[in-house]
Length: 528
Image 1 (cartoon, rainbow, N blue to C red):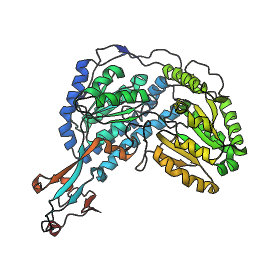
Image 2: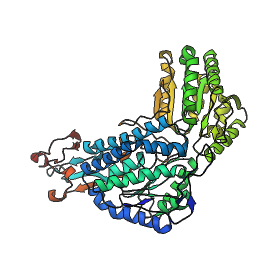
Image 3: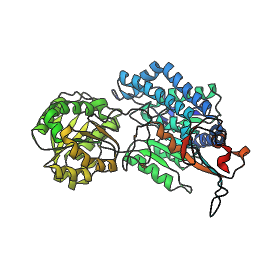
Image 4: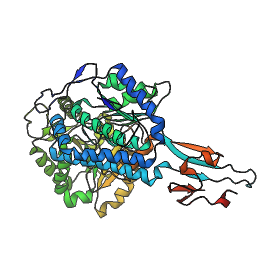
């Protein structure tokens, strides 16, 4: 573990990561954080908060860039350890290192741009009738220390130095991470890297800590600690709801940004199916089985209208899945849950299996699976929307456009919704689009949802149960807003104003001057 600037050893129960291919416990052994160690991490985070949030954006940007540089320098050792702990392929993990460092650099650039501060100035209008207007200025400030829970399926990009950590640090919030037990060695390497970067760039002690321990113990203590002001989580619906309930039950409730459950519907419209059904089937199977299906954006549901095009799609998808040899899943627990959840879905009335991958060569190896049901039964049975975390998908065969629309109207909140449409489908797509907007954080056409670009416009979020808060995202620069809050300054003397909202705009940031975007200084006569 890392608490403040120092690596420490927990004093609680022994915990080890496990090689999912063999079931062998991996060295070294770790120990859960004690009550006192959780307390110290939170106390240091609170102690660091005033100076860290007051640190210039340029210095925080340098801190993020130093983390990124060190991660890139240590790429090979990170990839090797993560491969041993997760069985994810080395090329995938190499890309994940780049994604993680790239995300940190993106937030560094966002800090320098300054728009994240949301500066606004409504100058005084002393001669306004019937009443004068006060001088009111606004900016956003950091919420406070943030607890981050590492994810099982992304040991780098959604864990210790992942998007939640990067966006919280960018906002000026100290971070306390609860490492995921599936990849403790990787988490330790990254945590030590962040601590080194903090020391190299002169950040206050306590700006970052990482703890080891169970979610029901160490995680619960973190969420309930009064010094923690927000939580970032990526994982199961059960885990996210438990954290949200704890946070709401505190004497002072705090926001929880939990990414939880999504089956990511794919809509195959008639003209697209007719023109390229077989091509779509093969591509769908590739997206479904990528990484043993262990993506939160995995296409777990397909909706289409009966016809020859759908038959071509079904055959191609079934052939591809039958030929798929599967892959070792992240943990034996995840593999067991995957098998049980798939069996439960297959046991629902009216559900039939029409394809399954080749028999796995180990207990932790996920076997791809395709199920099907008719549109009327799908619309009538909410249990058919249960997420199966892995390479299982349910094909819903609809009789006509009305049944397809009815099925879409029953959907829960989703991270993504995908539409495959040719030009002849655009009228139908236009009718479905508002329904999808109400239900998904990202809508994509003629692609597959498993890739999530890190950028300014990306939304990786959505209505419940995809997340606990549909108003933001855990990927992309908008994620910083989760850990900020607005403050207004009314008739505050110029000498006491934050630089972002002073008349002269010394930082050169974009602001809204009387509602208009500008980087100009505020003209003296505009306040008369």
